[in-house]
Image (cartoon, rainbow, N blue to C red; front, side):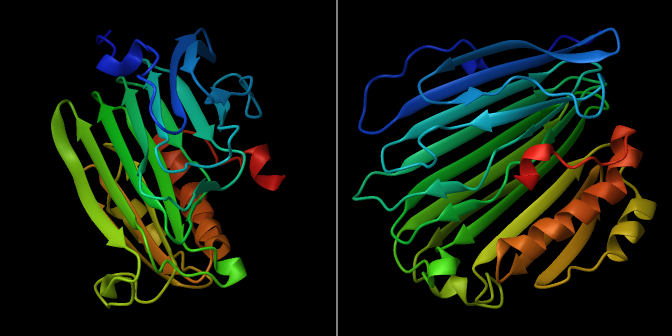
Length: 289
C-alpha cells in the first residue's frame, strides 16, 4: 500500500487572531471493508461538516461542508484539507451557493487542499460562488494525486449578484488551481479578475458573461472516447468547450446565469463517472433543497 499523501496543515492549530473569521477544517477518508468511512474530522472556527451520508450505499461517502457565516468577508481566512486513502471514495459538496462579500479593504481567502491516494476517488463538487461587487478574494485549490487516483472537480463563479442586476464593477478576485500526480504537475492555472476590467468583456476573457465555470476530471482513464462523448453534450445556454490532455478532461463554460452551467456540468458528470469512478452519477440530495 502506498503511503498516504498529507499536507503540513493537516495538524490544525488555531490561527493568530486577525480581522474576520479564521477557520480550518481537516477531513480524512479510508476504506473499511466495502465502506468508505470519514475516519477523521477536526476543525477550528466556523467550518464544519454534517454527518456522513450514504445515498449510493456503502461505497461512496457523501459529505456536506457547512460554513455557518454563509459567506467570506474581508479578512476571513478559510482552509479545507481533504485526504482520501487507498480504495476510499468521497463526494464533497456544499448546501448552497458560497458568497464573497464586499470588502472595505482586506482580502478574504479560501484555500482548498485535496490529496488522493492510489485507488482512491475524490469528487469535489461545491455549488457556485457569488462574488459581490466590491469583493476582494483569493481562491486557491491544490490537488495531489497518487498512482491511479481519480479526482473529479467543479468550480463555478458568478461575478455580481445578477438576479439583482449587479455587475462586478469594483474589487478583485484571484484564483489558482494546481493538480499534480506523483509529484508532477498536470494542470496549473492562475488568474486575476478585477472589477470593471476590460477582460470581463473581452473575447479572450469572459465575453461579457457574468458566470464562468470549469469541470475537471483527472484520471488515467481519460481518453478520446470520453472526449467524443463530452463533445456530443451541448449546453442549453451559454458557451462551452471541452479538451483532452494527458490524464485530464477539462470543460469550460461561460454563460448568463449559473443554472444552465450547472445543468451542463451535471450531464458531463453523468457521462464520465461510470468510466473513471465505476459508478453511475447520483445527484446529491442537498442540490434539490
